[in-house]
Amino acid sequence: MALAGKTKQDIVSEFRSAEILGAARKVFALKGFSDATMDGIAAAAGIAKGTIYLYFPTKRDIYLAALKEGLTELRERTNRNMEVVRGIRSKLLGFIRTRIEYAEVNRDFIRIYHSEFGNLTKAPLYDSQFQQLYLQQAEDLKAVLQAAVENGEIRNVQTEFMAFMIYDMVKGVMVQRLLEWSHRGMEEDIQLVDDLLWKGLAPV
Image (cartoon, rainbow, N blue to C red; front, side):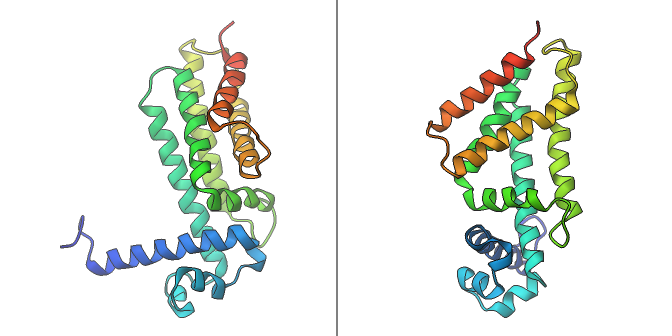
């Protein structure tokens, strides 16, 4: 029986697409965009190269789809975990924890996500949809901070600037752990960022 109005063909197509993207993330993380090939992605997915072209016309299409899928999932998970707690400090801790924990178990995605920041203004790798997804995450955090300022939970800070600063600080920890530059445990890194942020934001 079809699920939620989906046909069997829809379900098979979604499964195959996810299978291709999973393989693509591993290949791109290992080889980078330039050295990755459609043959290599097909081999990693265990399917014929021709099958990939039925879903993704070019290597760049696969790359962007893998990147956007991960960004969308990370954004949704982060927002969900911030929404279920009360108080700005708990919400910020939810932001920090969700993203660092996600990075620990999705290292292939984090590798290509990090590498894409060097392409934000460079053709042909630059993609406005990637930039928009990046900005949306900062906007989500800005809204949370703005509400906290209005409620007197934190100092009267410039919320857009602070949102990007927090976003980039957490991203930096994600990358440090990915590169194994951090010799601390994950929980210690999470608590360290939480402590630093709260000291800067707490009401005077």
